[in-house]
Length: 519
Image (cartoon, rainbow, N blue to C red; front, top):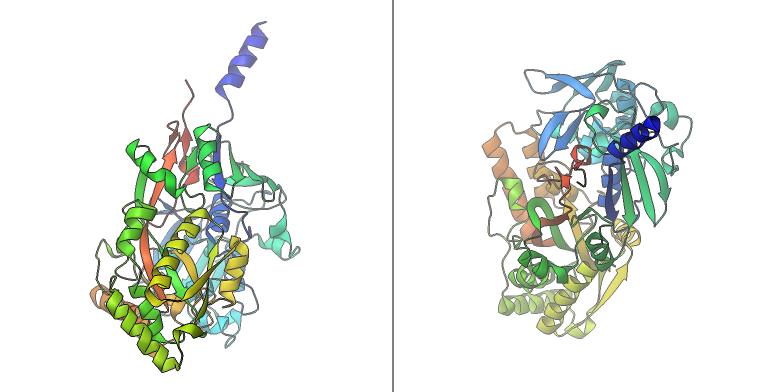
């Protein structure tokens, strides 16, 4: 009897601490080198670490136990702590070198090779101008990684926390090219959690990684992720206690619920470096005309949208950069609603195209989320009324729509960005060259390219900011994209959940979350 009672007490005190969350769609990949969407990125961050990590906006060491920077700011030497892959094999500097060089291989389907361009010869290698062996990424030995940059780059350390900088298990990757497709414990990772089971489009189960270098500080035993593509269903599950956290970009709240939740003081909000924007395909009629693009931007009632649709008091976009990314500094470089001027620009644009309004047949592309649908219908009403034209709204699932934007197979549509590192260059660089996977407008401008090159070489913080603002001015004038509003995350959190705080780039450190006992 005593043995039985002790066993019961032990089981009670060691009750599984499981966090229950949701994604609005299935992740597209578990390979850090290939990710470019928010859902995949969130899963990959749960399963992996890099040299550094972000925690509530603060950069901390992870697999790197220390580093040195040369006096000229160009050489970084990282010293690795004793860390292991989930299969028990030690993580080495060679894993980092091989993984990073693969990302910049022009034949590899990475969406973010440009994040390595600060490294010497990385951009040339990505363009096929030099061999990958000439890129200055060097594993000096199993525990030492040396990187040489083209120029001093103040945000380089922040870059190393980006998931594209995560290592991959070279002892697995070189033998099995399908290693990242396993949807069970065969998926070898190195982060705070490991994949236990992935039932596509239904659920994902993660468990605490017993091989994680910092496992003693992980208080969760598991994370259960439900795949729910309807915001109202997810909210009902939260209210029933079947979800612990709701309201980030991976699992948005229903727009119609926000006023009630605000009145109940149930929401926590965080201003972050993300935006919702309209992207124009500048190679397709009629958006191959700048004045048409400007006219469509000038017809958007941004203040009404954040007051009546999104309802979180987000910053209505008056500039390209989210203000939080610029230490709260805002600028008025995107002209606000001006119907008379918009109509004038629209007519001038039509004349330059030798076209008439009746020639305009437009399709506005969005994902199937309810929040995008409501915003798209509002924009559709603005534009149709202003220009007396017909606009069709086309909806697709997230994966299909993203593929179409990458291929420039659209006229104009809604997109989002969330910066990968805390610097304005992360937004500007995606529009530097037409062939960038995230340059959805297929736009390029030589003056803009030259300004970004100057910013890369500048060591003067004040001068660099001015150069970046000049590039922002070109983007706002040429208007291949027009931001509508900059983001706030509003979250619902079960009171038992602690440390579920959002950082300025939307980062949530799941490994720091604590679940208090029910009693």
